[in-house]
Length: 282
Image (tube, rainbow, N blue to C red; front, side, top):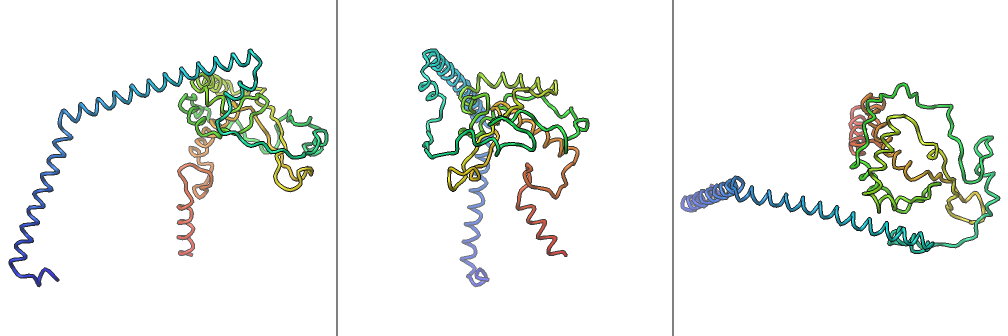
Protein backbone atom coordinates (compact mmCIF):
# COMPACT_ATOMS: atom_id res chain seq x y z
CA UNK A 1 0.00 0.00 0.00
CA UNK A 2 2.83 2.37 0.89
CA UNK A 3 4.68 1.64 -2.41
CA UNK A 4 1.67 2.78 -4.38
CA UNK A 5 1.90 6.17 -2.68
CA UNK A 6 5.50 6.66 -3.74
CA UNK A 7 6.16 8.63 -6.88
CA UNK A 8 7.47 6.96 -10.01
CA UNK A 9 11.07 8.15 -9.51
CA UNK A 10 11.39 6.57 -6.06
CA UNK A 11 9.93 3.30 -7.35
CA UNK A 12 12.53 3.16 -10.13
CA UNK A 13 15.34 3.74 -7.61
CA UNK A 14 14.04 0.90 -5.46
CA UNK A 15 13.95 -1.37 -8.50
CA UNK A 16 17.59 -0.57 -9.32
CA UNK A 17 18.65 -1.29 -5.72
CA UNK A 18 16.83 -4.64 -5.75
CA UNK A 19 18.51 -5.67 -9.01
CA UNK A 20 21.92 -4.70 -7.63
CA UNK A 21 21.30 -6.66 -4.45
CA UNK A 22 20.18 -9.67 -6.49
CA UNK A 23 23.37 -9.58 -8.59
CA UNK A 24 25.46 -9.30 -5.41
CA UNK A 25 23.79 -12.37 -3.90
CA UNK A 26 24.32 -14.33 -7.12
CA UNK A 27 28.02 -13.46 -7.06
CA UNK A 28 28.33 -14.63 -3.43
CA UNK A 29 26.65 -17.95 -4.26
CA UNK A 30 28.97 -18.48 -7.23
CA UNK A 31 32.02 -17.82 -5.04
CA UNK A 32 30.84 -20.35 -2.45
CA UNK A 33 30.28 -22.98 -5.15
CA UNK A 34 33.73 -22.34 -6.59
CA UNK A 35 35.29 -22.64 -3.13
CA UNK A 36 33.56 -25.99 -2.52
CA UNK A 37 34.75 -27.39 -5.84
CA UNK A 38 38.28 -26.00 -5.67
CA UNK A 39 41.29 -28.36 -5.22
CA UNK A 40 42.43 -26.16 -2.32
CA UNK A 41 39.24 -26.96 -0.42
CA UNK A 42 39.74 -30.71 -0.95
CA UNK A 43 43.36 -30.46 0.17
CA UNK A 44 42.42 -28.60 3.36
CA UNK A 45 39.76 -31.20 4.22
CA UNK A 46 42.22 -34.07 3.72
CA UNK A 47 44.80 -32.30 5.86
CA UNK A 48 42.26 -31.78 8.66
CA UNK A 49 41.27 -35.46 8.57
CA UNK A 50 44.93 -36.49 8.74
CA UNK A 51 45.53 -34.16 11.70
CA UNK A 52 42.49 -35.55 13.55
CA UNK A 53 43.61 -39.12 12.88
CA UNK A 54 47.13 -38.39 14.17
CA UNK A 55 45.68 -36.64 17.22
CA UNK A 56 43.48 -39.64 18.09
CA UNK A 57 46.43 -42.02 17.74
CA UNK A 58 48.63 -39.77 19.90
CA UNK A 59 45.88 -39.46 22.53
CA UNK A 60 45.45 -43.25 22.66
CA UNK A 61 49.22 -43.69 22.97
CA UNK A 62 49.46 -41.16 25.83
CA UNK A 63 46.56 -42.82 27.65
CA UNK A 64 48.27 -46.17 27.31
CA UNK A 65 51.55 -44.76 28.65
CA UNK A 66 49.74 -43.18 31.61
CA UNK A 67 47.93 -46.46 32.28
CA UNK A 68 51.19 -48.45 32.28
CA UNK A 69 52.74 -45.87 34.62
CA UNK A 70 49.77 -46.06 37.01
CA UNK A 71 49.79 -49.87 37.00
CA UNK A 72 53.50 -49.85 37.83
CA UNK A 73 52.95 -47.42 40.71
CA UNK A 74 50.02 -49.45 42.02
CA UNK A 75 52.08 -52.65 41.88
CA UNK A 76 54.96 -51.03 43.77
CA UNK A 77 52.67 -49.62 46.48
CA UNK A 78 50.93 -53.01 46.80
CA UNK A 79 54.26 -54.85 47.16
CA UNK A 80 55.35 -52.35 49.81
CA UNK A 81 51.99 -52.88 51.57
CA UNK A 82 51.30 -49.15 51.32
CA UNK A 83 47.51 -49.26 51.00
CA UNK A 84 47.11 -45.50 51.42
CA UNK A 85 49.03 -44.84 48.22
CA UNK A 86 47.29 -47.75 46.52
CA UNK A 87 43.77 -46.47 47.08
CA UNK A 88 44.74 -42.83 46.60
CA UNK A 89 45.80 -43.72 43.06
CA UNK A 90 42.51 -45.48 42.37
CA UNK A 91 40.03 -43.12 43.98
CA UNK A 92 38.52 -40.12 42.23
CA UNK A 93 40.03 -36.68 42.95
CA UNK A 94 36.76 -35.59 44.55
CA UNK A 95 36.79 -37.32 47.93
CA UNK A 96 33.59 -37.80 49.84
CA UNK A 97 33.29 -36.43 53.34
CA UNK A 98 32.88 -39.28 55.79
CA UNK A 99 30.10 -38.92 58.35
CA UNK A 100 30.38 -40.70 61.67
CA UNK A 101 27.16 -41.73 63.39
CA UNK A 102 26.20 -44.45 65.80
CA UNK A 103 24.68 -47.41 63.93
CA UNK A 104 23.07 -50.68 65.12
CA UNK A 105 25.48 -53.46 66.02
CA UNK A 106 26.29 -55.96 63.19
CA UNK A 107 24.85 -58.96 65.06
CA UNK A 108 21.41 -57.29 65.26
CA UNK A 109 20.88 -57.17 61.48
CA UNK A 110 20.09 -60.82 60.44
CA UNK A 111 16.34 -60.75 61.30
CA UNK A 112 15.90 -57.75 59.01
CA UNK A 113 17.53 -59.47 56.04
CA UNK A 114 15.78 -62.84 56.18
CA UNK A 115 14.03 -63.70 52.92
CA UNK A 116 10.94 -65.78 53.64
CA UNK A 117 12.05 -68.87 55.55
CA UNK A 118 15.62 -68.50 54.30
CA UNK A 119 18.01 -67.74 57.15
CA UNK A 120 20.48 -66.02 54.87
CA UNK A 121 23.85 -65.18 56.50
CA UNK A 122 24.34 -61.50 57.25
CA UNK A 123 25.29 -59.47 54.21
CA UNK A 124 25.32 -62.30 51.67
CA UNK A 125 22.58 -63.58 49.40
CA UNK A 126 23.63 -67.09 48.41
CA UNK A 127 20.75 -68.15 46.19
CA UNK A 128 18.66 -66.79 43.33
CA UNK A 129 14.97 -67.77 43.03
CA UNK A 130 14.39 -70.15 40.12
CA UNK A 131 10.62 -70.59 40.43
CA UNK A 132 7.70 -68.26 39.88
CA UNK A 133 7.22 -65.72 37.10
CA UNK A 134 10.42 -66.51 35.23
CA UNK A 135 11.01 -65.77 31.55
CA UNK A 136 10.77 -68.86 29.27
CA UNK A 137 14.24 -69.08 27.73
CA UNK A 138 13.00 -71.25 24.86
CA UNK A 139 11.14 -68.21 23.50
CA UNK A 140 14.29 -66.12 23.28
CA UNK A 141 15.69 -65.71 19.77
CA UNK A 142 19.40 -66.41 20.25
CA UNK A 143 20.17 -64.83 16.88
CA UNK A 144 19.80 -61.49 18.68
CA UNK A 145 22.76 -62.34 20.91
CA UNK A 146 25.31 -60.47 18.84
CA UNK A 147 28.95 -60.44 19.86
CA UNK A 148 29.86 -57.68 22.27
CA UNK A 149 32.07 -54.97 20.80
CA UNK A 150 34.77 -52.96 22.59
CA UNK A 151 33.06 -49.68 21.73
CA UNK A 152 29.85 -50.87 23.39
CA UNK A 153 31.65 -51.60 26.67
CA UNK A 154 33.53 -48.29 26.54
CA UNK A 155 30.24 -46.40 26.20
CA UNK A 156 28.79 -48.30 29.17
CA UNK A 157 31.85 -47.47 31.30
CA UNK A 158 31.57 -43.78 30.40
CA UNK A 159 27.95 -43.67 31.56
CA UNK A 160 28.54 -45.49 34.87
CA UNK A 161 28.62 -43.47 38.09
CA UNK A 162 32.08 -43.38 39.63
CA UNK A 163 31.04 -43.44 43.28
CA UNK A 164 29.13 -46.74 43.36
CA UNK A 165 30.26 -49.44 45.78
CA UNK A 166 31.51 -52.82 44.44
CA UNK A 167 30.29 -56.27 45.41
CA UNK A 168 32.32 -59.19 46.75
CA UNK A 169 34.91 -58.64 44.01
CA UNK A 170 36.00 -55.43 45.76
CA UNK A 171 36.85 -53.74 42.44
CA UNK A 172 35.10 -50.36 42.03
CA UNK A 173 33.97 -49.10 38.63
CA UNK A 174 36.66 -46.39 38.73
CA UNK A 175 39.33 -49.10 38.30
CA UNK A 176 37.75 -50.31 35.05
CA UNK A 177 37.47 -46.72 33.83
CA UNK A 178 41.04 -45.85 34.76
CA UNK A 179 42.48 -48.93 33.04
CA UNK A 180 39.91 -49.34 30.27
CA UNK A 181 42.50 -50.03 27.57
CA UNK A 182 43.64 -53.13 29.47
CA UNK A 183 40.30 -54.33 30.86
CA UNK A 184 37.98 -53.84 27.87
CA UNK A 185 39.53 -56.57 25.62
CA UNK A 186 39.34 -59.02 28.54
CA UNK A 187 35.70 -58.14 29.20
CA UNK A 188 34.87 -58.60 25.51
CA UNK A 189 36.26 -62.15 25.67
CA UNK A 190 34.41 -63.01 28.91
CA UNK A 191 31.08 -61.49 27.84
CA UNK A 192 31.11 -63.21 24.45
CA UNK A 193 31.94 -66.52 26.16
CA UNK A 194 28.88 -66.10 28.40
CA UNK A 195 26.66 -65.27 25.43
CA UNK A 196 27.87 -68.29 23.46
CA UNK A 197 27.69 -70.82 26.32
CA UNK A 198 24.53 -69.35 27.95
CA UNK A 199 26.12 -69.90 31.38
CA UNK A 200 26.22 -67.23 34.08
CA UNK A 201 29.40 -67.21 36.22
CA UNK A 202 28.80 -68.63 39.70
CA UNK A 203 30.78 -65.79 41.32
CA UNK A 204 28.31 -63.29 39.87
CA UNK A 205 25.32 -64.98 41.56
CA UNK A 206 26.38 -63.80 45.02
CA UNK A 207 25.71 -60.25 46.15
CA UNK A 208 26.37 -58.25 49.30
CA UNK A 209 23.38 -56.82 51.17
CA UNK A 210 24.21 -53.47 52.71
CA UNK A 211 21.94 -51.41 55.01
CA UNK A 212 21.69 -47.86 53.66
CA UNK A 213 20.65 -45.11 56.08
CA UNK A 214 17.64 -43.02 54.99
CA UNK A 215 16.80 -40.49 57.70
CA UNK A 216 15.76 -40.22 61.32
CA UNK A 217 17.37 -42.01 64.25
CA UNK A 218 20.48 -43.84 63.06
CA UNK A 219 20.13 -46.44 65.85
CA UNK A 220 16.77 -47.77 64.55
CA UNK A 221 16.82 -50.56 61.96
CA UNK A 222 13.61 -49.31 60.34
CA UNK A 223 15.41 -46.18 59.18
CA UNK A 224 17.61 -48.22 56.84
CA UNK A 225 16.85 -49.83 53.50
CA UNK A 226 18.85 -52.79 52.14
CA UNK A 227 20.68 -52.54 48.84
CA UNK A 228 22.24 -55.45 46.97
CA UNK A 229 25.78 -54.93 45.70
CA UNK A 230 26.72 -57.19 42.79
CA UNK A 231 30.21 -57.61 41.28
CA UNK A 232 31.12 -54.66 39.08
CA UNK A 233 31.79 -56.73 35.96
CA UNK A 234 28.38 -58.37 36.39
CA UNK A 235 26.83 -54.91 36.55
CA UNK A 236 28.50 -53.95 33.26
CA UNK A 237 27.37 -57.18 31.58
CA UNK A 238 23.80 -56.63 32.76
CA UNK A 239 23.78 -53.37 30.79
CA UNK A 240 24.58 -55.38 27.66
CA UNK A 241 21.81 -57.88 28.48
CA UNK A 242 19.45 -54.93 28.91
CA UNK A 243 20.20 -53.79 25.35
CA UNK A 244 19.67 -57.33 23.99
CA UNK A 245 16.35 -57.80 25.79
CA UNK A 246 15.14 -54.34 24.73
CA UNK A 247 15.91 -55.27 21.13
CA UNK A 248 14.03 -58.57 21.52
CA UNK A 249 11.00 -56.76 22.95
CA UNK A 250 10.96 -54.34 20.00
CA UNK A 251 11.55 -56.95 17.26
CA UNK A 252 8.77 -59.25 18.48
CA UNK A 253 6.50 -56.39 19.59
CA UNK A 254 6.16 -57.71 23.15
CA UNK A 255 5.45 -54.19 24.41
CA UNK A 256 2.49 -52.22 23.08
CA UNK A 257 3.15 -49.06 21.10
CA UNK A 258 1.29 -47.03 23.72
CA UNK A 259 3.89 -47.96 26.35
CA UNK A 260 6.63 -45.34 26.14
CA UNK A 261 8.13 -45.38 29.64
CA UNK A 262 11.81 -46.35 29.92
CA UNK A 263 12.07 -47.04 26.18
CA UNK A 264 14.61 -45.61 23.76
CA UNK A 265 13.33 -43.13 21.14
CA UNK A 266 10.08 -42.61 23.08
CA UNK A 267 9.48 -39.35 24.90
CA UNK A 268 6.89 -37.92 27.25
CA UNK A 269 5.85 -35.17 24.84
CA UNK A 270 4.57 -37.72 22.29
CA UNK A 271 2.56 -39.57 24.94
CA UNK A 272 1.06 -36.29 26.17
CA UNK A 273 0.11 -35.34 22.61
CA UNK A 274 -1.69 -38.68 22.11
CA UNK A 275 -3.58 -38.30 25.41
CA UNK A 276 -4.55 -34.73 24.51
CA UNK A 277 -5.78 -35.83 21.06
CA UNK A 278 -7.86 -38.65 22.58
CA UNK A 279 -9.36 -36.33 25.19
CA UNK A 280 -10.32 -33.83 22.48
CA UNK A 281 -11.86 -36.56 20.31
CA UNK A 282 -13.86 -38.34 23.01
